[in-house]
Length: 492
Image 1 (cartoon, one colour):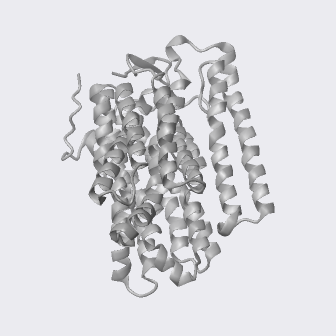
Image 2 (cartoon, rainbow, N blue to C red):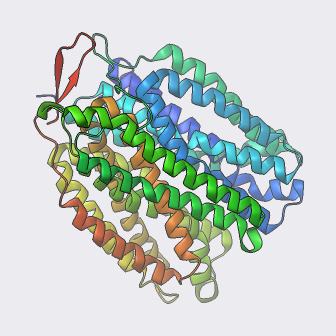
Image 3 (cartoon, rainbow, N blue to C red):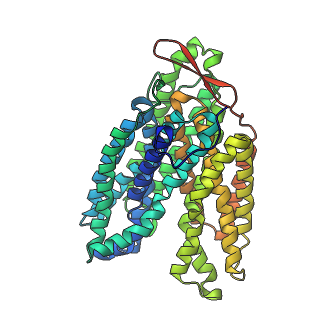
């Protein structure tokens, strides 16, 4: 039985693939968030107001929800090597557009397009799942996700320094452009350095493209229902871009986008039926069946883990400033550092979540993490201006451990559902994380921070109940090779 221990100092075989792939994810996140630490100087250079800055921040995530679905389909069809290399190379184009934009409109278009590179995460989930056995896939996926996700923090630390090195009011442009150059170069390096599977292994592909293959009629209707929140989130984003001080879209334009979003929903439903009707009519052999509830529950789990992380990381610096500025003299810089404590723990906690899932069971580990984050957010709702700052930060970091560990636990299970559709499953689960971020940030606009944390904790309690219905992966999954023979892939 394979050990869960990995020799991370090695640079051969599956460990080389892991290092090359988390670095690809890391670079994609550097490019995706290269604007954040430079936003103030960008605003000064182009004369942007606060409403336009907020619009840029919203646009950065607007395309990521549908992009993760699309990328999931592409990686299953074309393989992670080609898909990741293409995404990094293509992502450098809007990166250069953003770097040398001369107006708000050009910035907005480039930032919107850059949201697509945020879907790179999905590709590595399939790649790592191909190379690591079930006993190691949790910690491997956790390292991939945790270390790669650190790209956003690296961008915050390195790019302002790089802009200063280039010097002048335009230094930010060259710093941003440099990230595009790195992505373009690494696209070639990645393509010529990795393979989709270990030598002698088969890369299983879906029989049909455009939607997930479902193995029962009830699951098909369940799948349709679970696609609905993705379109609701895109509708919410359009609403945020067309109302209030941040309005970028006119009402006619917003109405047109609403129509397009829901036309795509109808087309998606038709595609689900088209892809599955023949197979369901003939019936699916028991050996090839899987339960869609596994995907749906992981959708909800990532909704509460990564979704809450996205929302809380966005609001936490301002929250700490407003809470402790008057009572304890916290400055905006100090508040930013305190808020950053929530995301920083991701570097260790996410791999730990995957490792614990490998060692003690995936359902149990995920249950513990969701319970912990519910308790953590409940505790954060009690923070007041009278609290000692070290205690508030300690509670925040403890909550973050459960949040990030939960992310690792979710993707410790994703590759163990149906191998040939791992990209599509990861795409849908990943998209639900973004849906959670959009929904929680929308709620934040209408409630106090304390109420916001209570709401997240309440949603977590509901998700915890749902997690109890997930099945622990065990036994084997079956996949059919090109010559028609069946390969059994171990799940435990």
